Image 1 (cartoon, rainbow, N blue to C red):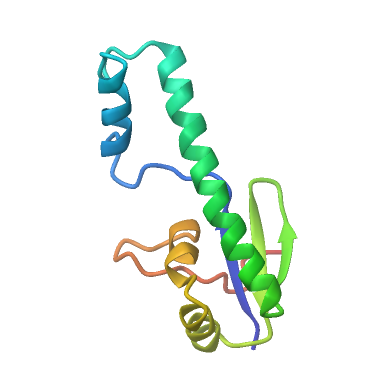
Image 2 (image 1 turned 120 degrees about the vertical axis):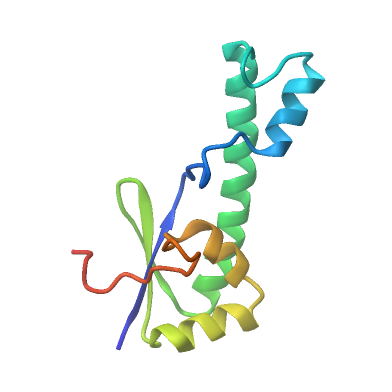
Length: 121
């Protein structure tokens, strides 16, 4: 069995609320999420993307070092390993990057990682 995990480059808010750190950034510019000018919103987005991509690069480097294959796709990456899903998760937990993988992988309503089960060409 092969474990396949889609890893998103960009994240969507999971609950629709503005993250607390963005609220703090808005406050530092003397505004709020409701009244923020476009420049501040774009700045917040840039900071969020830079942070997210730095974390993703740490995860990918660790996965590559463990022998995972990483294939870029249009809006995400497809990571695969010859391990089964349980072994793959254990490997990433032991490497200290499972938390990052969970943040970039699709999850179900219960917050569990949705592994790719033959749905990906």
